Length: 388
Image (cartoon, rainbow, N blue to C red; front, top):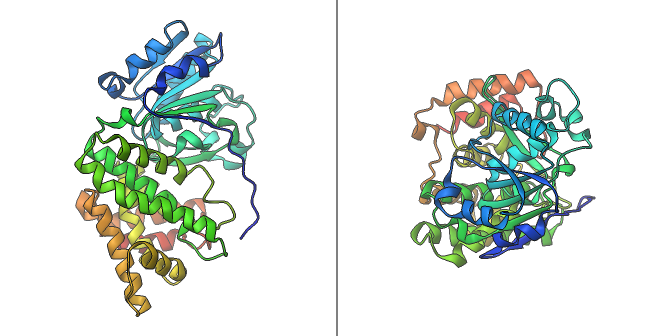
C-alpha cells in the first residue's frame, strides 16, 4: 500500500438522548452561534433539546443555510459573528450546515479581502492557520462532514461549487443521535445512503495496491448500506437501521478507509458541476455520474469492479466484460431502487448541453481528476454523454 499520515481528533458522542450532553462538551464562557437550515430541527424536537441543554449559555442563532450552502449566505453569518463577538460555532443539521460552518469558521478569521479564495485557491485555503472552533449535532447522515475537515461551498453569482480542505476545521466534537433522523423525508434518507455509498467508492474503486484490510473495511460499509438502505425506506423509525446508516456515513469519509490508497473523486467533481449548473441534489448528481464513469473507465478499474461484483453482488459470470457490465447495472439498479434516478433525462437535462458546460469549465480551469489524473474536460464530456 501507499505511504500515509492519519490523525482524526474528532470526539464522537453516539446514541439516543446524547444532545443533553452539549453543556458538558462546550467550553464555558463561550459566545456560541448555533447554525442551522430551514427549520426542520424545530419540527423534529432537536431545536428544543439544544435550547434546553444550553439554557444557561450565551447563544445566538443563524438559520437559513441552504442544502447546497451558498457563499453569499455564509458571508451574512460572518458579519454577525464579528459584530456579536461569537467565539464558538455549533452546526446543527446535515453536511450542508456543517460544511457551511467550516467555511464560516475560516472566513471569520480570514485577513484577506476576497473570502472566496478560501475555496477557489486551494494552496491559500489549505495554508490558513486560524479558525473559530466548532462542534456539530448531526441530523442527516450522508457526507461524513461531522468527522472530517472537508467542505463544499457554492456561489450563486458564478454558478460554482468548490471544495476546501483544512485540518483546522475538524469539529471538536460531533453528537450523533440516530433518533433525530426518524422524520427525514424519503428523498433525504435515500440521498444519504447514495452519498455515503459513493464516498466509499471514490476511495475503493480505483486499482489494487495490496490493501486487503482497507478493501474489506470499505466492503463492510458498502454491504451494510445495501442491506440497510431498503430497510430505512420501508421503516423510517427503526432505530437500529438509522443507527447503522448514520455510522456508515461517518466512516465512509472520516479518512480511515483511504489510508494508503489511491483515490478517484471524478464522480464528485463532475457531480458538483451538475449541481452548480442545474440545482440537483448532491446525491442525485452522484447517482447519475457514477455508472457512466465506471463504464468509461472500466479497463482502469477492471480488477476492483470484478472484486466488488464478486464479493458483494454475487456475480459469478466467467466473461469479465459481461461481469463488469452486470456489476455496473446492479449498482445503478440499487440507486434506482431507493428512488434516486441514474439518468440526466430523468431530470429533463440535456446530456449534450451538460457535457459541453462541464467540459468547458474543466478545460478553463486546467483540471484533471481520477486516480490516474485522466478525467479531463474531454473525458468528463464523454462520461456525461453516457448519462442520458
